[in-house]
Length: 219
Image (cartoon, rainbow, N blue to C red; front, side, top):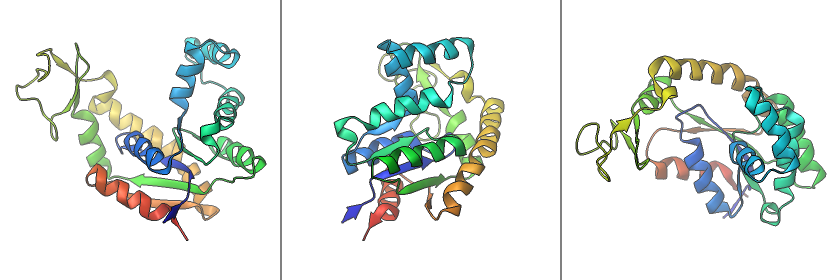
């Protein structure tokens, strides 16, 4: 079975997008292209693009599209991206989506489309507010699905468990509202061009992965 190999993964915080992007990229034999990882790489290695991005990030400003798109173009020029890529966290706007379409078209390999992972908001809130991490060894837990043996203590090292600052309920609710406002135009953009697949994000990692592979199977 052949599969589409140039796809964008869309989904709200807590939908499991990063986990599925990693898994799908490995399944397809293509890189997982995350703008967060690109920023970290360029900034840590002090490339010209990294230095430019860092000046904005230090001020708390958004990195301009031109810088982000240049980083993406550099990544797509790498040999391992010749067969495709799974994009995660990019594009975030219709302008970025249009520019990505142009980049890929110029390479002769247009984007196959975007997959939207759909999860009800009450489930997203439960997923995000229940996350915990060990302050000492960084092991991760979830109060509902993978709780520690002893409340508030790490199974691995006995260190105290903490909740990330952006995982409290009020912050999670705001993040989801921002996601809805920012992502709706992007969903509409791909849907209008017939390149959007919707996938149920409920269930185990394996179940969601199987649904993803199902919609990406090509004739």
